[in-house]
Amino acid sequence: MYIIAGLGNPGREYKWTRHNVGYEVIDKFAYDHDIDVSKNKFRALIGEGRYGTEKVILVKPLTYMNLSGESLRDIVSFYKVDTDRLIVCCDDVNLPLGNIRIRKSGSDGGQNGLKNIIYQLGDDGFPRVRVGVGMKPERFDMKDYVLSKFSENEDDTIISGITDAVTAVEMIIKGGRGMEDAMNKFNKKVREQK
Image 1 (cartoon, rainbow, N blue to C red):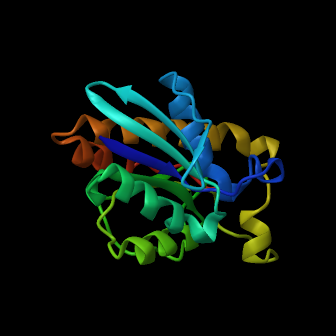
Image 2 (tube, helix red, strand yellow):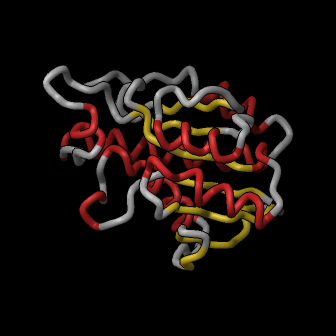
C-alpha cells in the first residue's frame, strides 16, 4: 500500500495557485485511475483505489499547507504505512516552471508543508516529488508569489510538469528500480524558465 499526498490549501480561491500544485497532481492521478477523492477523514480529502497490484490512498490535507503534517501523521498511523511508502507531492519555488525533482528522503528545502510533515512524523525518510512553479521574481513577496495563480502562458508548461509528476509517482509505486528510474528520467530533464 502507498499513501500519495498532494500538498495545498483548501478552498476555491486557492485553485490553480502555485502552492496548490500538489493538489493538482493528486487530481490528475485520481482522474487517470478513476479514483474518487471526496471522503473527508483525518482532516483531509481521501480516495482509495488501486494502481497495478498496489492499493493506493490519495490524500489532499485540508489543514492548510503549513500544517500538512498533522493530517498525514494521523493517516500514516491509521493505515500503518512505513514512511518510505508515503509519497508527498508539492510545489518548489527553486525549480524552473514545470521541472520536477524526485528525492527518496532529505530536508524540507524551505517548503513549509514538508517541514511540518518531517516534524510531525519525526522522520524525513519519505519520497517526495517536487514540481517547479518558477522562481520568485524580485518584486514579489514570497507568500504573495506562492498564492498567485498561473498565467495563461504558463499553463501548458505547468500541466506538463503535473503530468510528469504523476508518471514519476506511478514509476515509484511499480517498485523494483522504479524510484531510481524516475530519478534518472526526470531529475535531469530541464525545462527553461520562461
